[in-house]
Length: 153
Image (cartoon, helix red, strand yellow):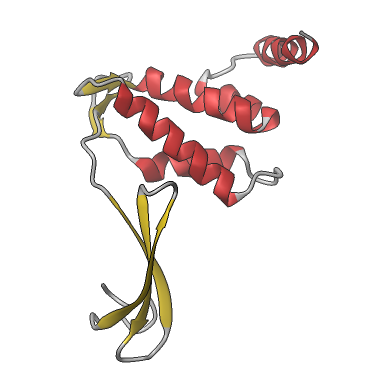
């Protein structure tokens, strides 16, 4: 493993623990060159589907891209990094559970919106306004009214 401080490849594992209900292994490492410590996470490489975009391009499902979208939507909101990690885990699992080799980008977007709805309603509206490409204030207000109705009901 390459040291993030000195870029040398020699290190030793100091401690290993399971994390996220056994789905991830957290390893504490020490660089043998600079003696600094760092943490790595290992997870099973899973076969994730290709995402079919609106223009029919295909991309590999990208966990980092999902996380970036969630972080942007949750910017300056009271949502912890741990909550975002958990949300990405759930999104990834739901996409994988579809069991198809390809999944439409809109399906991924809807799953992301469902997770944001659970996580933070302001972040949900932010994401929805970009994802659904609101054309005017009426579409924006309809989404907010819908959220308000859910809270009352």
